Length: 426
Image 1: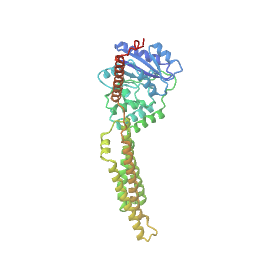
Image 2: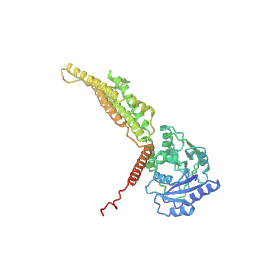
Image 3: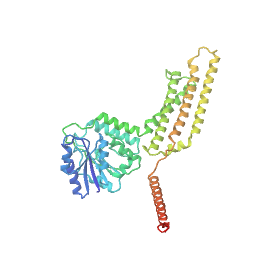
Image 4: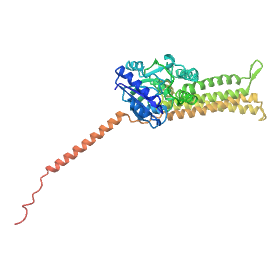
């Protein structure tokens, strides 16, 4: 079978029958060997029977949520290609050929773009049309090497095997973003075609919750991009803190009549420590995500981890610790010159704050080196080849045992049995 049209469904009695008939009519018109599959998520309004009467196959998906329903439908699909779309009659299921043609041409994922195809009046709330979708799609293109203009279009087609290999995990509305992000990171062939959006045919409110689901999309994009979540903010904060702290170590800075002194130096020290910690978190996340398969391995991060070994990390941390101890010693000497009495903060803090910062960063560096070494411990993973080899060895051993037992039985049968019947005395 070439194509399965999957529609998630939760109480869509008003529109599901129309959507099924449109999709089947499109496939008949273009001679496509296909089916319509309804992934029902617990409808109580008779949607299931209406879909069956219209010619669809219905599968029940227990796990609640948009993403869970779709993954249940994708796993149950029989087609080489899958086109997914909402069962609310907002997408045009009579215009599936642009998706099918791109899939036949070798695309792994074909996204619809509603902004290029046309959004009918009243089809999309202004908050979504002018803020939510454009902003989240822009963030998606910024965080990931994607050219997709509509990250959240619900009408999209893909090769079933390509998407299943990604191991998508999210169960809610953020599933739409995860599919695009994971496909992009995996290097799949992702394309885009214009599509239209019409007002849905339901009389009830949609399942989508603007702020809740928008936050879930944004949260997913952030969590899958350690560079933008941790590294870039941390690096900027650390550089600013170092520049400001270095300048203030030698004396106050005046901009017009505003002066910056040791109080600002303490703030600059905090910026350095927090920024350094964020950069380390980015490194931890990258290494862990690559080891667990959530994100593809970053060659630059792997090279850095290979270069910066545990021993080198301990040496760097030790050097920072020595610098911090030297600074504290200088602070004690400075205190001694004042007969261990009251100090002038504008002088003493210029020594103590950099020393304390160096000591804090030394322990951060040492602990980071130890933690990265733990993350880098390779777990033994049994591959399919290993499983097949083990099975072959077990089968060979079983055959050998059977052959040995057969030889023993044959040898026992060949031993002559002494006839004692005529050995009696007359």
